[in-house]
Length: 285
Image 1 (cartoon, helix red, strand yellow):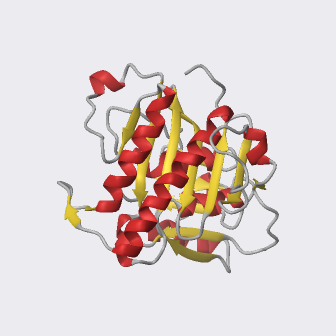
Image 2 (image 1 turned 60 degrees about the vertical axis):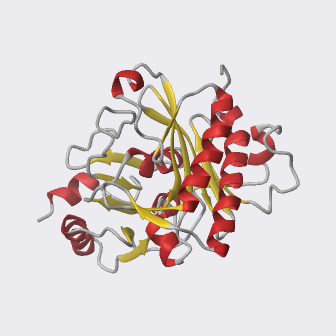
């Protein structure tokens, strides 16, 4: 499909809303849980959302790499100039524990770089989206319920949305941590941040919510010294960088790229460059 990146936003928002509605139906009625080969949980909601998203995104003619459909050989994937990278239900553990901190993640990659991202939080009805050249935004599902998705224009959605980052007045440094996957390496760098920025606050959150907090400006730093996959980060990466944040691998401080042969991410950090000197923080012992 030969269209501009922002022209795809209404379709992707509509897709995320559809998947989120199906997830909530399962959330409210009950589900079955199985265990995948890597011992991570898989629910009925993951599978239903995967089918909805795959069906909608295939309309674009761009190939789809989803957590629940990731068996595509690299010999095929390496020929892709563009691809969707999707986590139909990010935060399955949060879903099972019923804390509401789960999301729908849809990202678009061009030449290994994330150029579009949409994250939907079904429990709150909040959507975050961003793309190269247009910036990042936050909007509630209720606020855009009166416009016709996916046929509307990007500007119609943007006009009803808040541009990110928001203006949030605070002095303390806010550090995001994983609710379910906090590692010793992550704790170490959080402690370094505490030494350099007395009064810093650590907040835990599940799924890709941490990227959303950075993008909106309510957090400054998200270090991750633990396992993640491309579909965990792609959508949030696009939203964060188009809101002025920086995403780099650790400790190399190299760009985080996508549709690699190895789909497991390196360790990484998301940070606000106007608030944090990451190199200085890494030097601190």
